[in-house]
Amino acid sequence: MTDEKKKVDVKETADSIIRETKAKSNNSQFIIWMGALVLGAILGWMGIPALNEFFNFVATVFTRLFQFIAVPTIALAVITTLAALGGNKETGIIFAHAVTYTLLTTFLAAFIGLGLYIYIAPDNLPADIVNAGSEVVKGQSVAALSYYDHILGVIPNNVLAPFLSGNVLSVMLIAAAVGLALAFMPRTENREAILKVIQGVQEIAFTLIRAILYVLPIGIVAFAGQLSAQIEAGVIVGALGKYTAVVMLGNAIQFFIVLPIILVLRGLNPIYVMRQMGQAIAVALFTKSSAGTLPVTLACSEENLKVNPKVSRFVLPICTTINMNGCAAFILVTSLFIMQNAGFELTMTTMLTWVCIAVLAAIGNAGVPMGCYFLTLSLMAGIGAPIGLMGIILPIYTIIDMIETAENVWSDACVCAMVDHDLKGKLSEDGDIPAAL
Image 1 (spheres, one colour):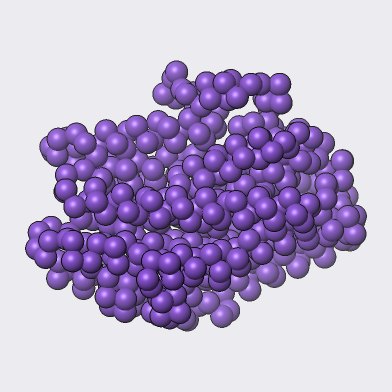
Image 2 (cartoon, rainbow, N blue to C red):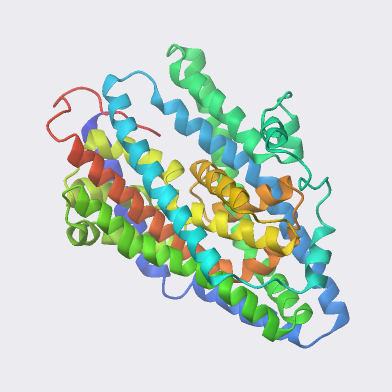
C-alpha cells in the first residue's frame, strides 16, 4: 500500500468516526448505560426475592462471558503488536524511544494510584458480599506461597494449560514469545499466512466483544440490582466512594499534571499538543476504545501536530496496546481493593510487586472497551480472589472506562509527540514507513 493511499485511508476513516461520534455521543450508548444503572438500582431496592435471584443469575452469566473473551483477546493483542517489530532499522530506534516513554508514564500512573490508595484508604465491603463472591472462584489461595512460587506459576510448562486456567501472566508470556518469534523470523509466505490467521481471529474476538457490549445494559441492570438489594447503602457508598475517588483522582493527576510536566521537560508545549489532539481525546471519551480511536489519533498527529508519519504510524498502533496509563492505575487500585476485602495481607512489598504486575498487565491490554476490566477480573481469578466483587464495581466502571480511555489516548499522543521531537532530523526522508498494524 502506498503512502498516499495510507494517508487517504486514515483521513477518511478518521472523518467517518468523528461524524459517527458527533451524531451518537449525545443520546445513545451513554444514556442507555446510565438508564440501565438507574433501573437496576430501583428494581434491586424493591427487595423482590425472585427478581434478586434472577439478577444473580444474569450477573453470573456476564461474569463468565467476560472470562471467556478476556484471555484470547489479550493474547492476540500482544502477539500482533510484537510481531510488527521486525526488519526496518529505524523501527528499533523508534520503538526504543516509545517503550522508554511508555514505561515511564505507566509506572508513574501506577505509583500515583498506589500513593492515593494508601492515603485515602478505602474501607472494606460487608463480609457477606465478600464471602458470596468468593464462591465463584475455584482454586487455592496464594497467601502461603513464596515469591519464587509466584514466578514459577507464571512460567508455563504446557501451551494450553494457561488458557484453560485463565492464568493471564502465563498467557502474556506465551503471547510475547510468539509475537517476538514472528517479528524476527524470515518474512516468508508462511509467516504472512500465520499473521493473517492471527489477525482474522483477533477480528473475531473484537466482534464478540462488541456483541457483549451490545447486550451489556442487561448485565448492568443485574449488577446494579445486586448492588442495591444486597448491600446497605451507607456502607457501600463509603467503601466504593473512596475507591472511586482513588481511581478518578489518580486519572486527573496523570492527565492534567504529570503528562504535561513531562512534555515541558522534553521541550514541548502541553497546551498546544492537547489542543491539536483534542478531537482524538473527545472520540476516546465516548467510544471507550483506544483501538477504535486510533484512526482519529493518527489523523490528528499527522495533520495537526505534523508528526513524521514514520513515527506516528508505528508509535501510535504500538501505544494502543502497550501504553495504558489509566489501565495500570485501575488494575493496581482495583486489585488491592479486592485483595484487601478478601483478607490478603497488603504489605509494602506486596503492593510494590503489584505495581509491576499492573504495569505488565496494562502493557498487554487489548485497547478495547472494558479491556482493563477484563484484565483485572482475570488476574484476580488467577490468584483466587473473589471476582464476584468485580460485579459490584461494574456499575460505576462505565464512567471510569470513559475517563481512562481519554487518558490513555492523551498519553499515546504525548509519547508520539516526544518521540517525534527526539528523532526530528535523525530519520531518513525516504524509505518505507513502518506500520505496526
